[in-house]
Amino acid sequence: MAHLRLTGLTKSYGSVHALRGVDLEIEDGEFFVLFGPSAAGKTTTLRVIAGLEKPDSGTLVVDGHDLAGVPVKRRDMAMVFQSFALYPHLTTYQNLAYPLREMKLRRREIDTRVRETAELLRITHTLERKPASLSGGEQQRLAIGRAIIRSPRLFLFDEPLTNLDAKLRHDMRAEFKRLHREIGTTTVYATPDQLEALSIGERVAVIQHGRITQIDTPDALYAEPVDRHVASLIGDPPINLVKGTLKAQGGNVGPAIELPFMELDGSRWREGLQALDAGTELLVGIRPHDLALVDEGGAGVPATIEITEPQGDITILDLKAAGVPLRMVVAEATGARYAAGDSVRIALAGADTQLFLSDSGTMVA
Image (cartoon, rainbow, N blue to C red; front, side):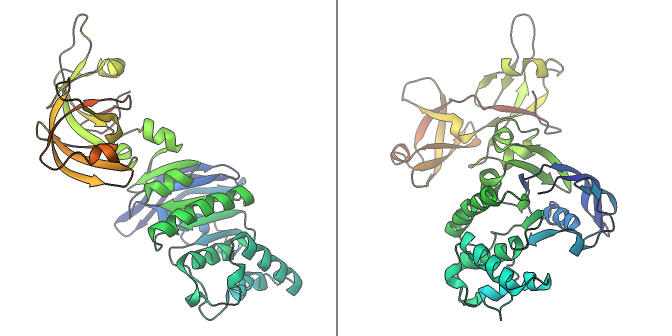
């Protein structure tokens, strides 16, 4: 296993700033996820860790040793890319054995490790087949096998499930968790897929434009995003961000936020709002799961259904309330009763409402 610390890493390609001062600390045996959209800096970070790219500035320390100038082969790391990078003319057995032969291991030890790795990855039945005859999932397991068979101290995975279909991605997410539980090697995993990030990462670093925005557990990223960018990335369907205005505060009246379709009690953000002037523009984050339908005649906000999106056990309702687009989640049986154009009443029904400054996007605590 390996303890990894990145401090102030920067990397530019001409006028393009890929990394802008990345700071990370990854613990021994941790499954750590880098999560962000394309061109956020995920792959560059992994390539710098692996030694495939040299940073312009900053330090990379593994187990107390600065890796500046240490070549790729001496870093004892294994990286798996989006493309499986398999030798098409070699069988599964030969693909797995290749890195061990490069290490000059004896034939008997190679055979033992190949068969143990194949069994661990459940691809023993493919040992005599070539990659072209394997399924996507089998090819991915083989690519992982080529990485783990050397028993490196650190695994680097660069969007390894991107080229698989939805079911295979689901199966492989479970496979990654199982393998990490059994092997325990420190792992850094890059993905643009929030479901992957939240389901397999012990901690997740959100990266944007070459900077780390927030590092936390999946639950904390959902409940306490540091800004609207993180809030909008975490959660499916995405959070509703509604423009609001801080009303004047005074006397015994608590703070309130004026939304286009309702007035929201701001008492839970009293401390953060005290320093703001009346009229300050805010963004209120409302999770789709925290909206509920209200019985006809009950209290609530009038809204019109624009689209219904059945998802199997749930239905997503796309609504408009006072001209503001909102999305909410209801049970499938409930959603089946509604169609585009129906009028409904909705209300806030959860405690996960979040508040952000409109100009900076920073969360109001």
